[in-house]
Length: 269
Image 1 (cartoon, rainbow, N blue to C red):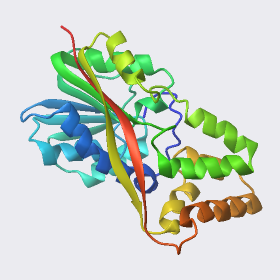
Image 2 (cartoon, one colour; image 1 turned 90 degrees about the horizontal axis):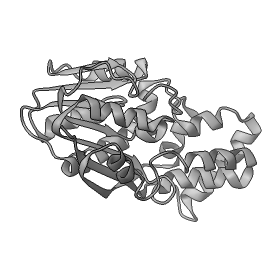
Image 3 (cartoon, rainbow, N blue to C red; image 1 turned 45 degrees about the horizontal axis):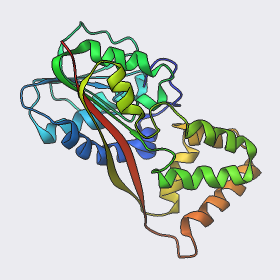
């Protein structure tokens, strides 16, 4: 994440339950879109617990990967999981990257930019550290129109509590989540050959408890909201969300579509 991030970050394992498992699923289609090449130096901006950085190993043989995140707990979690000497995970701010100009062959960001209030600064930093001709790419959830599992929670909560409605509105109007917004930002930043695409995965939950567990954790906007509720309010919300999840059938596996906006462009000289 980045300075003044609006994402609650507290525990690496909690992030894995809340988002890391879906980041890993999205990493493959994202890397297919932005491309990879052997021998490159790659920067992963807002790496979380390292899902995208680790996926690079499956796609190519990078020269080295630098991965930064504003959360020390996520960086520590990533370091425990990856011991390849080509990987360096470090605490850093996407809006003030501690790297020289023009030093990476590819600069990528997965599911981070929409949590950065000063998005233009982060995009500018990604451009600054990219070598001329480097691919710079990013992806964010289509939060309003393509994030079914998340809408199930927020739409249910908003029907019970006006405060949840306010949070829902903030969640679905984050920067870079509207159609065409990433491409416009990339063009404004001076990238050439800008291409925007939609990437899709399925979020598969084993049961309602599997779905609900992240919301009673300590990571992400949903858990931040649930933590504000009194016990009775929390129980009422849980029952309502479970009714929406099971949807008239026995509890068990559910599969929800999830789509993300993605963009790539070429760094100028």
